[in-house]
Image 1 (cartoon, rainbow, N blue to C red):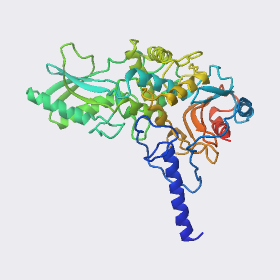
Image 2 (cartoon, rainbow, N blue to C red; image 1 turned 135 degrees about the vertical axis):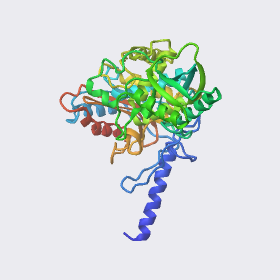
Image 3 (cartoon, one colour; image 1 turned 120 degrees about the vertical axis):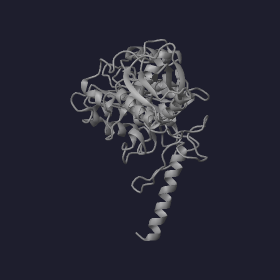
Length: 452
């Protein structure tokens, strides 16, 4: 291939990738697959590739939608696929009307894995509010200093970054504000307590297998970057990390600290400093993109507080379901034991998942608009960055993934070849014959087949 042709191909590939990203609302531009109601959230830059040229979704949708027989056949083929060792349930709808186009046991309560996070996101945005921020406060009573967790588990140990979701607020900034106040009171030596009383109940859900704990932080209303260690693994004891980081930050400001442990702040304690997290909409987007379990459980606990429920796993489950019902979303067959989807006890019919997706699609000024941009794009980012390969779904699927040892699920949006939007949910659970992860490529092929 000549150098001139290589350059031309590279330019064309970059242009195709940009047009695709523009149509999915990933980068600035005039193209879109759906009228925008709010400015899209920022996303990573798109990197062009020669292996997978991408066509843009049609801007004037036309052509037929897949019929019930076609959809039933696709799901039946998925069920008989040797890579699928469990039970298939699925449903496909037209999100513009909510019409069910086809289903395969669409009402069967199935173990959803991390597609549970769609329920958590819907409840969190609706109940907490997309623009709400979470405050980490410092209170003072005499020489007793209380660091009070308010639900921000993505704190930076150093300075905050106002442009970031993770590390939006920083403990070093909080320490600087605190030290300034203390020095104005001629205080240079304090006893430090950590107040985690916002949450109650166990650190882990009683329904989780012990092996699950490596995928989620112990429940705490305060943490430094979800308590990830240097190897990006969830470390134990997030409160210890917080106390150590804040003690060091105060020391750097000339404040002598005796860290005493956990204690609820006294009634006479006065606020002396505070920092705020990124807005809830950005926190939800991060949770959906990365399928972050710690964020999901924290949001669930916060929804519980808003609903007047105990801030524990049971309270969070009841509060999320209560919120969905209030929003007019089908909760028939829904049973929750956590907010992340790590529990095998969770049961969600595919119909509930598409009901949420259709609510998101049709809302204009509603509180749920962060969910669409928060979903990963097939072959581009998040938990779908390595999915759909050379299938027709590459670049045309935006969805929430779910994975457990015996479960694989996917719920989101795609487009027909004629540009007609589809919402879908498919769950393979009880995969006892073949591990659940083996079903992923089979699911990808099934969803890609909807585009034909």
